[in-house]
Amino acid sequence: MTGSEEPPAFRLAYVPGVTPTKWVRIWNERLPDVPLTLVPVSAADAFGLLRDGGADAGFVRLPVDSEDLSAIPLYTETTVVVIPKDHLVTAVDEVSAEDLADEIVLHPLDDTLDWERPPGRPAFERPATTLDAVELVAAGVGLLVVPQSLARLHHRKDLTYRPVADAPASRVALSWPQDETTDLVEDFIGIVRGRTVNSSRGRRPAPAQPKAKRPETGGARRKPAAGKPSGNGSRSGSGGRSGSGGARGGKGGTRGKPRRRS
Image (spheres, rainbow, N blue to C red):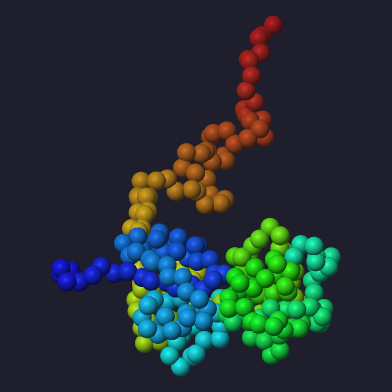
């Protein structure tokens, strides 16, 4: 490497709600010589960051423009409604969009759910961010429907959430520019897909271990075949003992003390 060349590095973007800790840990174990830098980005700005080269790959929310970006869907999140702890909705384990029809439901500008028509009654003004909307819920202004990871990210002691059964779900994916599928991107794809370090599709297989040598068997005894006597055993009728029956069979076969003549 010359003085003008920079050492390899990998930049990984991630949108709010995504926790890349597990994949980063595996990367550091497999490629300790290649530093990984995390780049937090809003859901709205994630695709522009990838296109502009601000990150090599990123965890984003679908849909992704497939014309210039590749994507691997990873998982689908549960959608929940964020409510004050003393709200009536806390009495149930799950709600529907229809259950929220009479409620003011906040719809922030950075909303990640693909609504055909948001539930509830709209607020007088749309909050700029999800965090702003959470603050309004805490103030009693309305409710907020978001992916569960965002409800956890902006958790407050005075708020809770319940699943919304029929709300659109948010899907998380790994995305990167199609024209920039580098070796390091391939390495990270392998980690995300769960490939082992010895996978045939990996670029950095573990060194092959030498096969253990078989012990030499030239001087070892062979086990006698079934029904054949061993070399050290005596054969029946050859003068040796062949069992309890052979010791008393025939004339002269009985051994004992000689009789004394009277």
